[in-house]
Length: 256
Image (cartoon, rainbow, N blue to C red; front, side, top):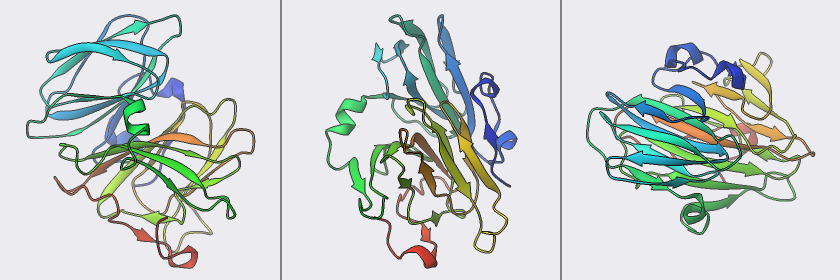
């Protein structure tokens, strides 16, 4: 399996895992101009607001999800979204297989941002690797396969550095947003493949890049840096240790 790069207009239908080179992760971009009901079947579902705001109705309650908020929907369930405000809301959906009960959650970005356990700063300003990482759905959250959050790099800075991989444990999917007219470059390559990487993608607002395998550093332009959702799905149920990864030896020994 190899990386796939899709544009926003290619994501407005449900894109199945095999179409983006993945085993587990299916995706869709919802531009919420009217009420939309999203089911889960035998899957757990993560929704991330990447533009505007939506009102939501779920069996456990109703509310409003604003920019950068996350909604987690259990298996055999559904949620209804409706537009809120004057800006067209855009919501990214990620489904992965699930075979046990979990609980619905509205994870407000403001709460994650204020939580020092889930809002981490990694890297070094001198090396231009300084970035913020928000672990919205971390290993302590009750999910069968998902780790999901957001990252934002400095102007012209690198993220996911040093290069690392978790091919055996997890597949990863990136959706880029909040770039403010900027762009970035997403790489994906194997141990012996730096001369022939399987992805060198120029990414802009709303683009998606899947990373089923390999090292996957990224860099933003000086015009606005790079900002994205990271969505990881564990190949083995309940195996959700974020730091279970391997760093490319030539570029470091620790993920920091």
